[in-house]
Length: 122
View 1 (cartoon, one colour):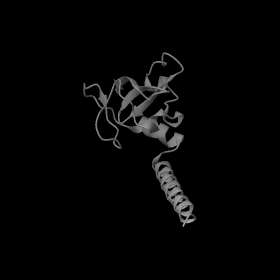
View 2: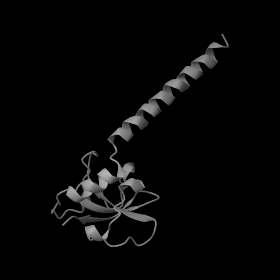
View 3: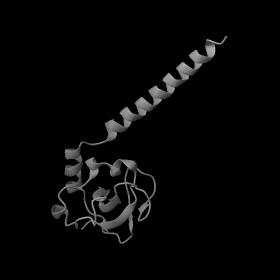
View 4: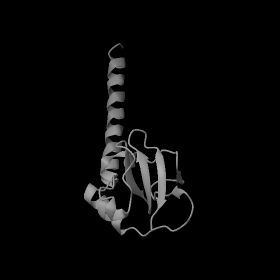
């Protein structure tokens, strides 16, 4: 009977590892490449509303200043590289980067993903 417990634990660990791996693969399939993201950023139409929130089509609810952005935007792949092309100011420090969420520009803290500023796209 003692051999059943380690076997059960091993099977449980394998199931959990498989679930995590499947979720990682699913997330990677939904993520655009850096080049695709930069092209999408340039093509999106601006949102001219005056509310200080951003909306991600893949995220439920509004994103507001002080709240964390979805984790995918924390990555360098989503950072806008050509700030001048988008009329964006340089971040105040190297721990921040600009992304486009929905149709709005959002300044994020690199470490916490906290939204520092939202600029409505023009």
